[in-house]
Length: 159
Image (cartoon, rainbow, N blue to C red; front, side, top):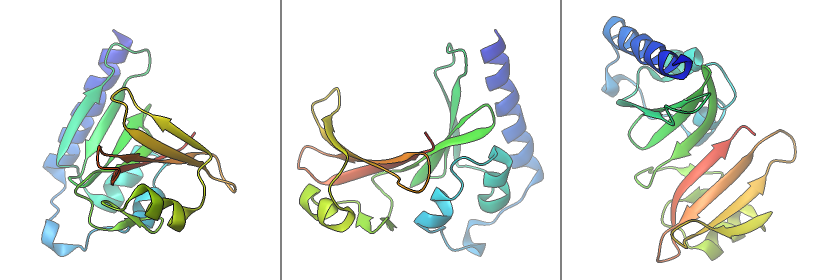
């Protein structure tokens, strides 16, 4: 019950922000990967100040003790837990780079650009993903690859 109330409060807050804040998408250039990544670990309110309201809001794990909400900004998004940005996600339609790697790069190209990963894994569908831990801060970078071994998503996690 508490988890559902938290999600409902978050959704109501976002609706209020969307109604009260007018942001024209053509007024601002899209943010850089660094601007997006720098929001990981900050309060949710900082995301709205910097980027406006999201295109969509998707509750996840609503039955969990601490449910998450995905703020979908089209080509990137943020997972929010307890009003804090837990991670940012760069989706397959992201046009920029993520630490120098681009969506569509081969796994070999990504490793050449970012160095050897800390671990190489496979997801539940058997598709590869690579993980790099940050040396100077908490968190990690995870890059997923499609069936053709091309980069199709990147996630920067705070923990």
